[in-house]
Length: 210
Ligand SMILES: [Fe+2]
Ligand SMILES: [Fe+2]
Image (cartoon, rainbow, N blue to C red; front, side, top):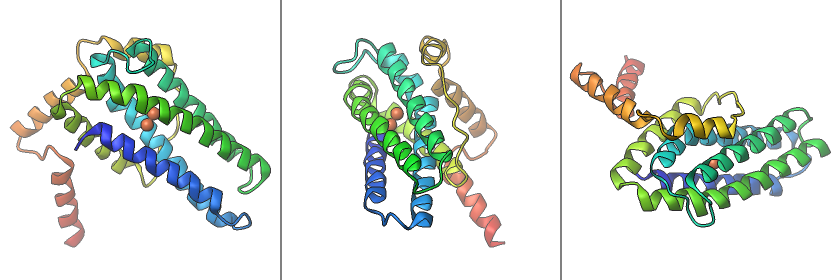
């Protein structure tokens, strides 16, 4: 697994889901609402998982990809973009599904998200591919997918972040999320508890069967 590939695939899926809406019968408001709700949950679990697991490691290792001035600039800008996408998603909630106001908000979300994904792929993902080991990319992928899988069904409450505070708080800390989690995993392994999602899934399936 590779976090940069997973993010890129999810971007493609987001593009496809906006395309479903564009082609959907305009008078099928139930269908539009259902597809939009699923997309809105996906946008937020994707953005939040990036902020939790990908950007902190990018801040630690990155140097600024492509046309980014620096790693701080590319991450700060990405968080700012996430807030704009969140704002458009909130605006859609204020309107009846299928109304002009709703479509305006959905198109705004699409515009902000398209701009953001292009920049993220060109700067953040390219930077991380150049600087991070395959082992780290695998490790972050596990955490990212695990978090998204836990949150996908119900979604999560979108919370705007201050881009400058985000960069300052996560930029040069002595202990990264990854280091903290490595310590937690070592602790769990020492106690004989499962350390991955796979282990927990097995337990759940057994419980469900009994
Ligand atoms: Fe992304
Ligand atoms: Fe993003």
